[in-house]
Length: 283
Image 1 (cartoon, rainbow, N blue to C red):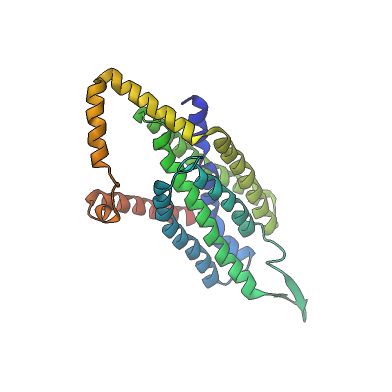
Image 2: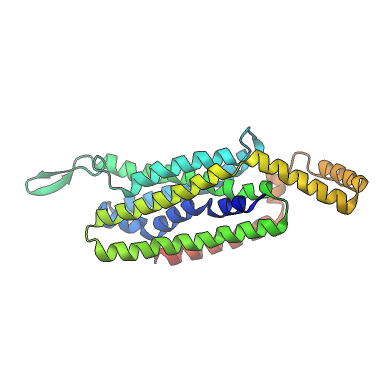
């Protein structure tokens, strides 16, 4: 595994992070102030996205664990998720005329198809979060296939987290500039949207063009085996492989996970952290 692969992994989640920042910070304000949706519909839009994300996240993990392809176990989910996120995010923040079609009646601007508009802004966030979950889970899980070196894994995850912070700074800084110099609310969000889609798709394309999961997985396994042969010897390695094979037959079942105390500890810590981050970003 070379430096270019580490760099590609590091920016592989940047598109998701850009979208997440814009989603949590500006979505509710955009739907209420720009699109002019009722408060309860704006709330349903956010809820539909978050509940879909909560359902799809474990499903994608389970399915990507179970099925393998010629392109790898995780990579196809990443590609599919990216091409779901892109059009859905565009459809939410671009203020499409055919969705927000107003006509003047008796001197008042009236929406031609209110049920269609409300359905659009409830369904599209759900679809967006299907793609977002695919990218998130596949990108998080693929690191274990790319290298067996804990040092490299730590470096890749740390750099990924660094780009998460950079995505937040990028969106918020761009918003400060755009909101200061552009007066039209629709144009403000179209400019922010264009920046997110261009930067995000470029970094995701770099990941997709650089990471070849089956090849890198094979290389990682060969390097790990060579290292263990040098340090342990072939006989000790053979005994270890047999023990692992017996231990990992079938993997953990859902019941096994529910009986594991650390599963709940990690889940609660992650949930509380995400709540704190999301609430802070939307204040």
